[in-house]
Length: 143
Image (cartoon, rainbow, N blue to C red; front, side, top):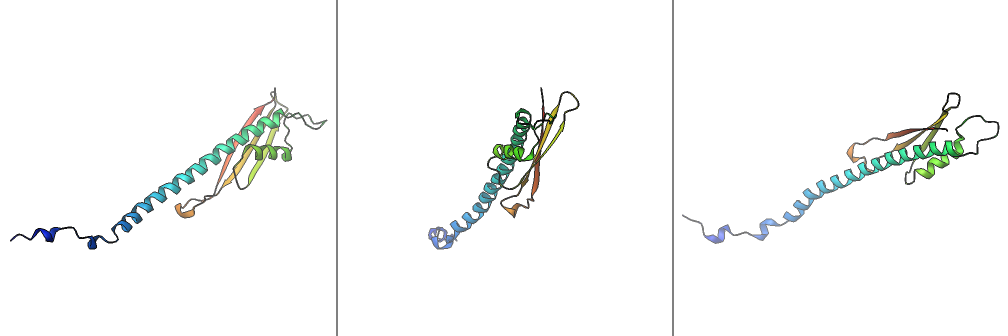
């Protein structure tokens, strides 16, 4: 025997909370994707900013002609001024920036090498990301 049509009808009382459960399932995926993309974007921005800061600082160290008199080197590696150039070039990076400079004025052509290191710390620890050192080295030659 067939059941009456009214027995197969959709009942709203049976679907209470359905929207909340669907939202919870979709929200987990959405927020995981959103914050994951945000973390990757922060890391890539930081890596690009560190690379730019290393290049600009090496250029600054070679180009600035305020080398103290009597110094025969081609690289102005006074770390106070060099760190200022790094900080100005790496705008938007929080945390600590470490700067080192090497030079070899004896062998032509003279060169200056600057290494910039930045400590990347993830904003959200939920993804199992650890703090990582991002480093870039640039070398400029003196003409």
